[in-house]
Image (cartoon, helix red, strand yellow):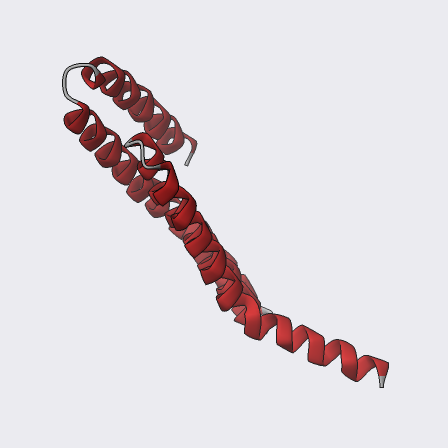
Length: 130
């Protein structure tokens, strides 16, 4: 796992240097390099994290725990990563307003995703009070 992380870090460093060099000559090509490198890094990292998530899911199933919370957490993590990637890409291309809207959309998506979970916790808390 750590070798993949170092590979991603190296790739990001090389892509950043290429992007900086090309920015003065071709802003569009510089943005394409950044987006492609970011996408490739995300794919590599998602691939490397899939095994630990699978092991954690197996542990939850083995101990007969409610996996509803786990599913919400993994989905929220995914939304957060995708939102961050898109917002950073918008910022890299000079679109700070769009980056802010992307972040807002991610926050709304996470809130919407977690609302049933929050209502469930509220029901449990009110049941304990009664």
